[in-house]
Length: 173
Image 1 (cartoon, rainbow, N blue to C red):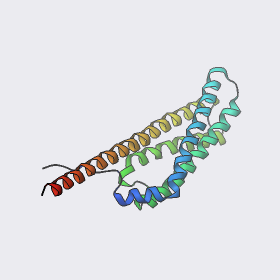
Image 2 (image 1 turned 90 degrees about the vertical axis):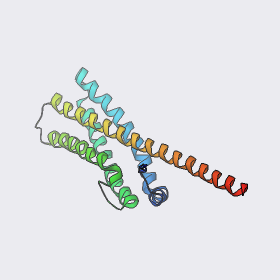
Image 3 (image 1 turned 180 degrees about the vertical axis):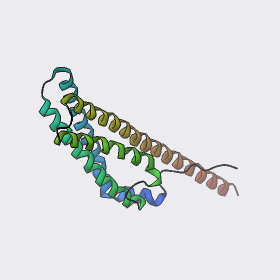
Image 4 (image 1 turned 135 degrees about the horizontal axis):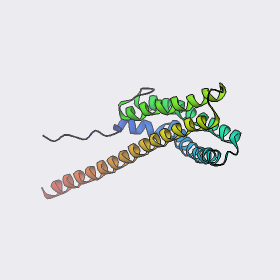
């Protein structure tokens, strides 16, 4: 018995995804957030190495956190449009679970910053933990979407082979 591999999107979900403005929003916000991350992590590491620009590093982390929350909210809307569930749709369940850790770590940093509950280097260590988690989560999503693209391409090839066989059989009879 052959087990059929479950695709990330059903044909109906793929249509919803392709027609949704939220797909474009996610496609714009994801690289912007990554650029903000790259600038911010550079500033955090610079502060840790030199002790310079503590305030600038903090502002950059707050901007990064804003983009994280924005992409999370718009991502929930996208997930609702495509999968009819705001969070934890089967296709992205583990990515969403890990996203909760990423948000928790970013908000822990924000809480500690505004409550002055950590020394600057400890605060930056929390930010680095949040950034490591974010990087892993971003890699999860990229890998999942890459696999979805490969699955879709394989499905198209299979369909074209099936159509070719039908044509050949029909022509031969």
